Image 1: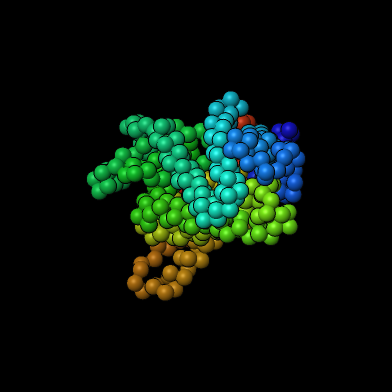
Image 2 (image 1 turned 120 degrees about the vertical axis):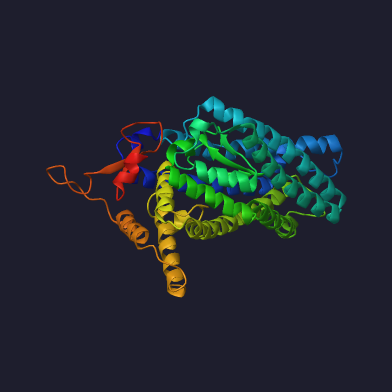
Length: 438
């Protein structure tokens, strides 16, 4: 489907094409979901059920009436995610087979179907009985339970794929760093056998530091150290816990949003005098709006935190280049172009490499201006970072007829296992000696 588009593209073209297509598919997915919810709320749900709840208020009948609308909604909204999954596969981001993907996705679909069925039935019962307090409590509790279940499930999934790192896998030159960390923290360095799409930074789970197998192979030792320090800073700030609390607070806005829709659009359809199956779709619509608004807020907070974590990591390490190299590697493995336009950044939780490096340089400039006399400068490292920044920001140039010029000495980073010809990109190398030793 998409393979021909990526077959002859270089890295920059490939990354721009992928991010554009993925953004368009994500936007189309939101539009399809909204259209399906509006159709159900405007009467399609009643036609699928072919009956109003009143005067048929027997509990078994109400439970059966909800099944057709849930099946319809599930089938419609699954189209765009399936196409996006195909896009990730054919551009080389996700190398898993269709069977392995379905093995992961199907249990969630089955659980989600019965969870939505049960919660919708409880809401319909309370609507029918006119018990507003129980209705709102049921909705809020079910949403909170879903967020907590998602966090617990991800924790257990990662835990099931963990193994302790062997001595041969320790990155060269970082043994002393890990020994000091283990002495202070008492945790272990664990490897996650996770072959999901893209590349992720190291993270914490309990007292243990978690590194994926892909990260061990992709990052240079000093860049991996920068990622580990960033994970330690995030753990000290308890970002995971704070993120979960913010998520719970944000998703609670679904309750007033659903009530506003019920007493506006629902009122025009006879609610609360006549309770229809379509009224449940209005509650879904309120939850859908609240979920995506909270997503945008969380993405905005995440982008700000990444810039702050970058500066904190540099302050602890006393070096700039390892983090810049880590940002480069992350951008290549995740097919992020150097500069993301605002309409792509708007829905992303991770800023582009150019934005991150500019934020780092601006942050260091502000810090040096305020505390130049207190903090000794590192001119060599800062000069290298400025040169590297100029190279990243500059447009690619062609080599001359003798094969010399900007592409004479390059470092090749592997992006995926899809194709040797199309999954490498080149960056100028200001530290040839250090890279050759790695």
